[in-house]
Length: 189
Image (cartoon, rainbow, N blue to C red; front, side):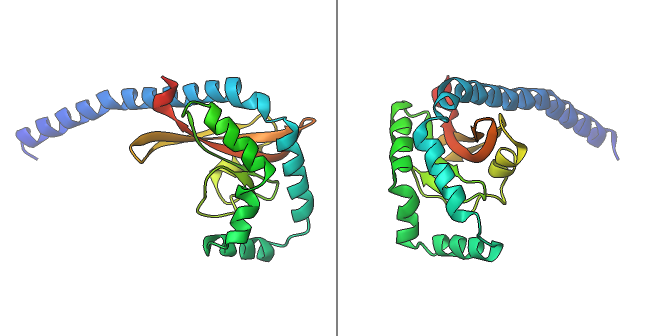
């Protein structure tokens, strides 16, 4: 390796190392800001009767499903079965979530509630699948127990910087489901 190549490599490493703390700081600040928003503006209404009763009813309805049944529901969802989609997007919980989304002033871009099996219960917008239990949003909240909050990385979506924030839904201290919100991080500033 020539001296010129070594100097270029050293310069590149120095630049990268200089950016790494800034990137880590930015990543931590978005998670802290989103978590603070969730604790102040979302957690207080997760114990609302509209949320708890819908999740409890879904847990009861899905209690005896086998994985093959869950896979069949998920496949119907992916095939755009309108009746199935309407069952989660046109119910009382979906109406409740839509009102909360609208009242957020654009901070909340989407919201969907999952039951103890990871199946969608109510939502404001479409999701790519119905079964969320194979994803971090459910595994790091419901599966982690009461009080869990998971803030995912920021992703670009339609020119917006969106971070999904997921929270365990609890009733009387017991985890019964989870909820995920799309949070427009630029609206938090």
